[in-house]
Length: 143
Image 1: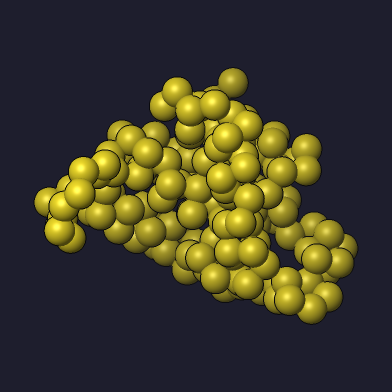
Image 2: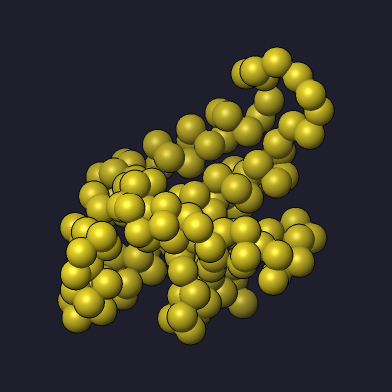
C-alpha cells in the first residue's frame, strides 16, 4: 500500500492527522509505530486543537527532522538539510491548498463546537485526506 493511502486509512480508523502522517513516514525510516503515534499526538488538529499548523504538516516536519535532523550540539545550523526541506514542504502545501494551518484549511475552530462540526460536515473526507496525501507524497518526494 502506498504511504499516502496508508496514512489516510489510519485517519479513517480514528487516528489524528499528525499521528497518521508521522507514524507512516516514521515507519519508513525505522521508527517503531507506537512511538511515532504517541510522539505525534499533541500535534493533531493544529497543535492540540488550537487550529495552528496542520497536524499532517507537523507530521511531515517531524519525519524530515527524523531523517535529516542534527543530533549534535551545534549553533543554529542553517546548513542542515532539514530547514530548506521543511520550507519546501510548507511552500508546496500552501501553493496547493492555500495555507498550512488547520483552521485555515478546515474552517473549524476546535476550541468550541468544532469537533462536532468537523464530523457533521465530513471535513476529514472533504479536506484532510487530501492534505494528508499531499504531505506524505511531498515528503517522500523530498527524500
